[in-house]
Image (cartoon, rainbow, N blue to C red; front, top):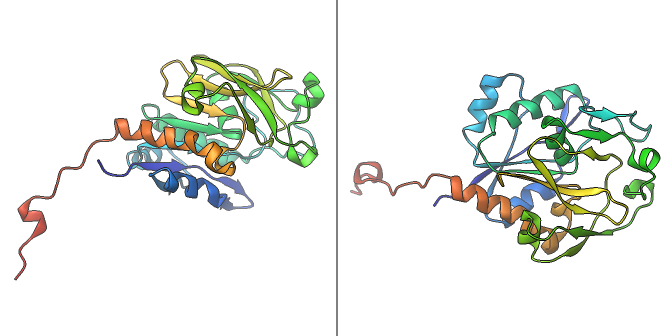
Length: 240
């Protein structure tokens, strides 16, 4: 089997695509080849780029506006429309391949399935502080027994980082929650068919603790990726 190719979406601000290097490093450590998804503008190009990929990570980012309930707070700018459009294009083009949504990425997956999201879960739902920029520290999440995340992590509880202001109000079609914090905030979701896993935290920043989540994406992508046959004599050529 060849090494699988994992697409990684990026942030977009002031005409620049940005990406934390730890996403690509985690994919490489897990045995995959990271490919940065360009900012896409049309469905045909998205399908052509998706044809290069075996799986995809939708990364963290700015404030989700799809399915938004309430307003975004002043300390959370909205996602740029160009990124929102590009993410939607590649998401649809990758509808038959494994996907991992991280933070914004999990929220985006839920919104694309028709789910709703708080603009500020702390203000609107009385939740604990979940943003490091607001003073949150690492917190524990409870993982649902029998869920994909439970199988991946092999335990009932883990300590995760805290990087979000928004949180899911209700789940989109075909999705179920697989982890929660003590205050009831959904910290992970998955699709009924097992193709999609989403986490509210950032596993790429958690070292060996978070790596199994990235490795699981690579494994799921490998199970769907075509094998590459050995080269024929004609391909190899003749040494003189």
